[in-house]
Length: 232
Image 1 (cartoon, rainbow, N blue to C red):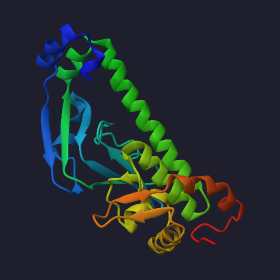
Image 2 (image 1 turned 180 degrees about the horizontal axis):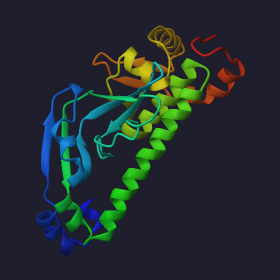
Image 3 (image 1 turned 90 degrees about the vertical axis):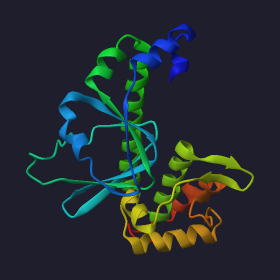
């Protein structure tokens, strides 16, 4: 973000906007003390790593991916007083480095409005990403849901190569099921069909390659609409 401020101000920004960095290994993640002190913090900025946030309600779980550069406030639990209980669980898909943006950081940040705007933009970008995740859940075909999901991941994390867009995100079938709203069995079946159509491939290191040309066939697939949880 330093490129958003004048060059002569960058040294002052580095000195003023110091943060504490928290690390966590891959695996189940509990905000712990970070949430305990939430009332005195602006939020958290994910510097490195990838989080899967699961929201469960009425025996249904919806997943959201939170990547590097995104803001979060895991201590905000708006569903705690709702008539229908809402459970939130976190899983670090990769080791995490998280900047703690405390109230001192927030007070100093206001000296540079362009940086305030940048943080606001990141918060809004996450809301748009979450809205897309909700839309993906509404797609009736699991194979199409997966294609749209991987297109979204390609846009966020992908790197174009001669073989296709490499998506360096390691997601198992259970993770994918939560992200598209389908059972693991349905995801397995849809993945096999996408592999057979050369729309998607899984690399030896468990990352993915998306064939962008396959996205052009989505309208044709939707014309052959099938019930949710199956593909034709």
